[in-house]
Amino acid sequence: MTSYRALLGRIIPVTALLTLSTTANAAANLESDDFVGISFWLISMALAAATVFFLWETQSVSGKWKTSLVVSGLVTFIAAVHYFYMRDVWVATGESPTVYRYIDWLLTVPLLMIEFYLILRAIGEAPGGIFWRLLIGTLVMLVPGYLGEAGYINVTLGFVIGMLGWFYILYEIFAGEAGKMAAEKAPPAVQSAYNAMRWVVTIGWSIYPLGYIFGYFVFVDPATGLTTAGASESLNIIYNLADVVNKIAFGLLIWYAATSETKAAQTA
Image (cartoon, rainbow, N blue to C red; front, side, top):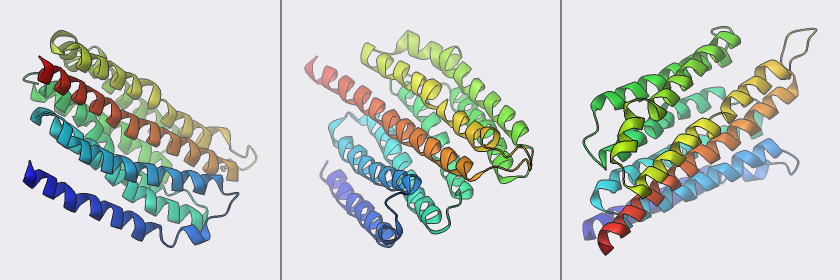
């Protein structure tokens, strides 16, 4: 435990230092009426704070849950770093930071799906197929979305294929092997958290398609077929809202399951 505390004592100050160093220049350029930039700022700091919380709380849970909380901390840390850069791109140029956003998602969304596998592994021997199916589902969801937003393929085609990947993930965590294992083997606290995580992926992730729709189908000039200025603002505000809900809330649900089961085991 002492060595583990010492490791946290090194990681958390580094996180704080990175946060301070990457925010030093952005504040001077942020306008009071730039609500998209303000949303980037708020979410980047919330993600940094969540990282410290999840890493610190690993000291309060049993060993089988530590990896899940560390992964939650990695998700928020990776997202925070990317949000620092995305915020600066928006404040400096007013353009949507598509590349940074998808780099973030390509790293963090698979980690979120791995969390389902880890929470199942904490309650029993989870088959490796669950891990690979969820990973493939995330790639099918994200890669066409990026190709559509970046202009490599038709935006409608990218949207449709990405939605199919999302539906595949929903099937796996509700009716597939992952869902069946959670229903049959999970204790009440873990099952409650797992069910909440599923609804985060269902309802929380539905915010992302809304951002895509507003960004590429709603705010379009009918005369030219090009997106208007409002498209970029709407897309980024909606994506930012989705990220703060899905990444932080998702980690908090895992923290709840971990602390609840740990306390139940200690009092048994």
